[in-house]
Image 1 (cartoon, rainbow, N blue to C red):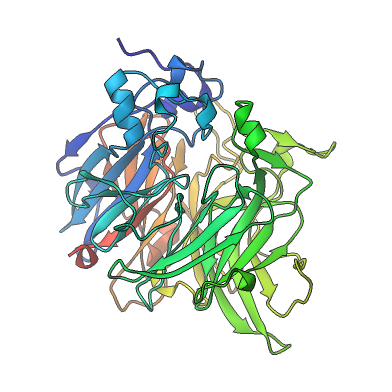
Image 2 (image 1 turned 180 degrees about the vertical axis):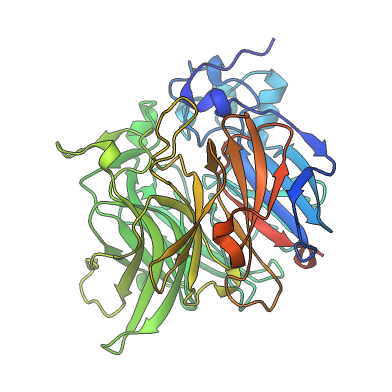
Amino acid sequence: MALPFPDVPFLSGFEEPCRFEGKVFDLVVNGFLPRSIDGTFFRVMPDPLLSPAYFQDGTHYIPFDGDGNVSAFRIRDGHVDFQQAYVQTERLKKEKSKRASMWGRYRNPFTAHPCVRAAIESTANTNVVFFNGKLLALKENGLPYAMNPDTLETLGYYDFEGQITSKTFTAHPKFDPKTGEMVCWGYEAKANATTDCCYFAFGKDGKKTEECWFKSPFCGFIHDAAMTDDYLILMLCPLVTDLERLKEKQTHWVYDYNLPVHFGVIPRRGSDPSKVRWFKWKNGFPTHTANATQVKGSNGGTKLIMDSVLVYGNALPFFPEVNVPENLKPENLKISMVRWEIDMLASSSIPTIKDPKILFDEVSEFPSIDDRFVSRAQKYIFCGVTIPDAVTPDGKSLVGLGALNALAKVDCQTGKAEICHVGPDTIVQEPVFAPRSKDAVEGDGFVICLVNRLDKMASDLIVVDTRSFADGPMAVVNLPFRLRQGLHGNWVDASDMA
C-alpha cells in the first residue's frame, strides 16, 4: 500500500503531487491562437511519484525535490494537444521497484538507503531543452536524461556518446544563435562538495568543441550563467556546502551572509584554467540571468554587461542560514532586475565590481528574452512579477518570490514595463517567448506561460501577444486538472524539431 503524502507546505494544496502520465487531446481554447504559432512548449516540474515519508516525515522536503515530470503542449493550426510523462531515471525506477522512496534529504547521498547509494541520484526535474534531435531533461547534480521529443519516451542517461568527463551538467545551458553551439558547465563536477568545475560546449552536430577544467573560490551554488561571443559568465552564489555537512546528514546547502557573490568569467575558446577570472560583489543572490553582451570600455578593454535578477539576501529560505545580520527580516529582502558591469582590465586577483544598475525595481523572476538575440544587447525582458495588492481567496498576500501573479514586458532602455494581468487568484509560472516569425524584429511574438488558478485548483496555459501585452492573454487554454509549480521550460518551433 502506498504511503500517504505528509501534510507539509510543499506537498499539499495546489502543490499536492499530480502523479499523472498520459495525453489530453484538443484542449479547450478560449480566445484565438494564430496559425503562426507552430511548435511545442516543453516544461518540467518536480513531482514525487512516491511519498517521502518512508525515510523522513516530510518536514525536510523542499520544492526542488521530486521526480521530473515533463509536460508537452503541442500547438498547431489553433489547436493544443497535451502530453505528460515521467523521466524514467534510475532513481525513479529503483523506487518504483520497491514501491517506496529510497532517498532522504535533498542532494545528500548519506541519507539514502544503503542499497541505492551507488545509484544515479538525479531526478531530471529542473529544465528541459531540445538539442540535436533529443529532448534533454536536466538536473545539475548529474548528466542529462535524453528523451524522444515526439513521444516523451526516456532514452537513457546521456553522456553525449562518452564525450562528457564531468559528473554534473547545468540545468541552464546556453545556445549560441550564431554558431548553433550549446554552451554548458558543471559544478561539484568530480564529486559532492568539491570546488571542481568544468566548462564544455557542443556543436550543433552534437560533437564536443570545447572543454576547460578549473576551480571555484568555494563550493557554492552555480545555477545560472550568461554568455557573450567570447565569454561565459558564471554566478557563484553564497549558498555553500562541505563534505562534513553531508556526512552529518544535514542539508546540502546553507546560505552564508558573510560571503560575497562571485562571478566566474571563462573564455569560450581554449582549455587553459589560468585564463579563468573571478570577480566579486557584496553578499547577494543573483538567481537567473536574462542575457549578456560585451562592449569596448572607455579604457580600451572589454567590458561585460549582464542582466539578472538579484535578491539582496537568501532567495531560498527553506535552506538554513548562517551569519545572519541582526536587523534582517525575510519580508524586507529586496528583489530587482539589475545590470552588472565587469571590467576585464581590472588588475587585482579577484576584483570587486561596482554596484549594479537597477533595470526594473519590482519583485520579479524567471527573466526570458527573444533567444535569437542571445549575446546581443536586447531591448526587452519578459518575466513574472508580483503585484503587491494581489491576495489569495482567503485574504493572504501573494507578495513574495514564489507568488508571481502577473507578467511584465520590461524595456531595458527606458526602465518602464508593461504589465499583463492574468486573472484573480492566479500565480504565474515561468514565461517563455516565441517569435512571430523567423525574421520578426526583436520581441515581436508571443509569451507563453502556465498559470495556477488557485480558486479552481486547475491550470491554464496562456498566450500573450507582445504587440498588445497589457491587454491580457489573447488565448487561455484550459487544462482539466492541476499542474504543480514547475521550474523551467522552453519553446521549440516545429521547423527546428523537424
